[in-house]
Amino acid sequence: MENIELLVEALKKEGLRFTEQRKFIWDEITSSNDHREAEDIFLSLRKKNINVSRATVYRTIDVLVKNNLVRKLDIGDAPSKYENKIDSHHHDHMICLETGDIIEFYNEELENLQDEIAKKHGYKVIRHVHQLFVKPIK
Ligand SMILES: [Zn+2]
Image (cartoon, rainbow, N blue to C red):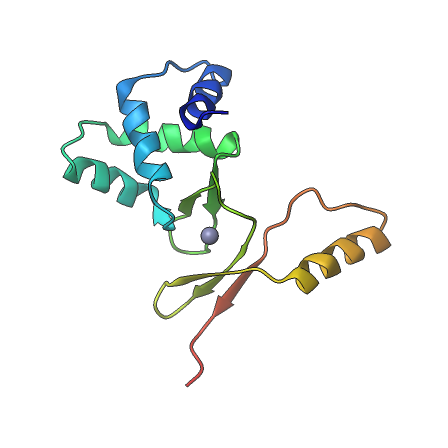
């Protein structure tokens, strides 16, 4: 499916119109692999002189999360961060409590181990969230 069609489909499902503003939001999110707060995404659009309301940005991000196009990272006390899920392979995150840095990692053994544990309990894993909160070793 063409990239932009994913947005159109998601909006349709939520009963929302495809607008130029929402396309700008989509472009802003899909052009980056960063983990950003909704506010960062909003400010980045504003900096590019794109006239969108904060409410539209937040609402559109919610729709994208709900439709599996954007991943939401719940990182405890700080505001959630968001990342583009298009072309992004599954990975887990480490969050540095000192710097706020987010480090991506993927470990096949860990993935398999999680599947095994679920299986032992009579389940299969549909999706998982695995986050490590870390501090630099000094
Ligand atoms: Zn990530």
